[in-house]
Image (cartoon, rainbow over all chains, first blue to last red; front, side):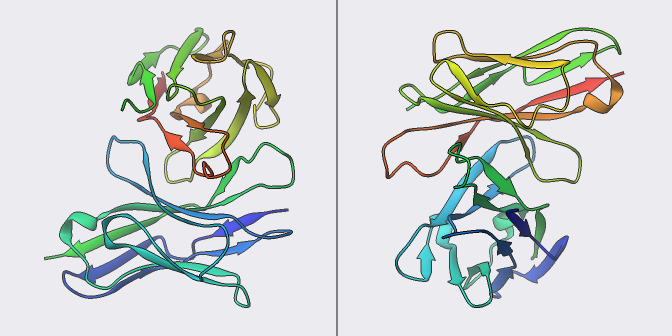
Length: 115
Length: 115
């Protein structure tokens, strides 16, 4: 079965510091991995994806993620956090086994950037 | 361009009532998904449409839940005899079918509260 784990319910970081939000996955076959952000009362916004190619993926709003096959991880990173980055972040893996390409989401990590 | 829209944004109903939730996908997107997000959880897959047909409804929790997409565009999620446990945010997402369109685009969700 395919799954995603986000081991941290909340991450606190000071503004200007680098941030990391962790994600590990378990899939059969090649993983298709995604990060989404959710602001209060808004839908999920796509940040970035890994399909193939370079292990370092760059996305929206200065975020990037590093795919590590040996550690089955896809951690979200940003070199310098902003207060406006405070939100709920979800990692997801796409189910490539059933033909639906549905997402399997982690439980989310709340990022709090402190001024 | 217009994104995915969902109506209503909020729905409060009484236990035992029938509700309908509507999703307008991005124009031209043939793939449409419904997810349910309970408090403190990541979204969970409910059903997937490719065109007019439900290609995968394995996530529907029971036979009180039903969804349609009669013309391959707008979709309606229908819940009969609502229960308090149905309270959640219901998210709709759409996806294009070209190979580059791997990510799903989410609507803002409908918050359903069953009293």
